[in-house]
Length: 210
Image (cartoon, rainbow, N blue to C red; front, side, top):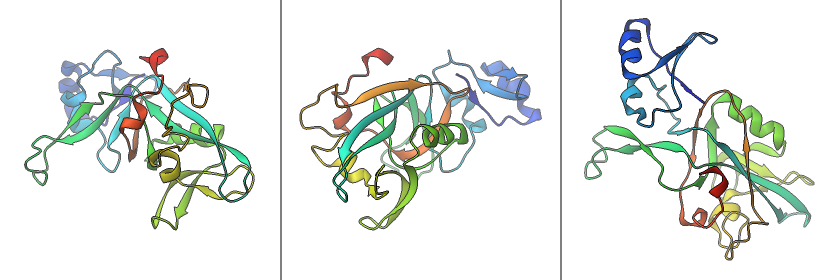
């Protein structure tokens, strides 16, 4: 799906020349699916806290775990991507230089410690997983969108899910039956802020979506 740009009227000819097209239904310029290098549109990509752009296919990883509080089995999920772009410093030797570029992710990823995402994506996540809530973690003194127990409502922290060996999304021995990767539909590509990458995702079976 295309990604929506913020193109002022004065820049419309430049955006068109670079390959953007005008989507009359929403009266916005967008990056079409076939364009891989999105840096040509960098100045029109909405700036702010969202530092990843997820392009189609839009994915969700699903698993279960035993709640540490009530001891019952509860579903957990994480947004995932195989086609995404993230901001990187152009000069790694000058991290304070300020110049950044959009770089395509080399490996599939799950997102954790989610701070925000474009509204359509957030609405979908909350709809399919009502236990996904903005929660405060006492352990790390930090609030983020997280899984909570279906039965008792207690936080299922992302450290235990993603970062601790043996967690649902960091299995010691990977079994595809334990982690389901599914796709969902959105009208447009979405931006997201959270942690991504990590070796624990390299064995997961994303082959259906590559």
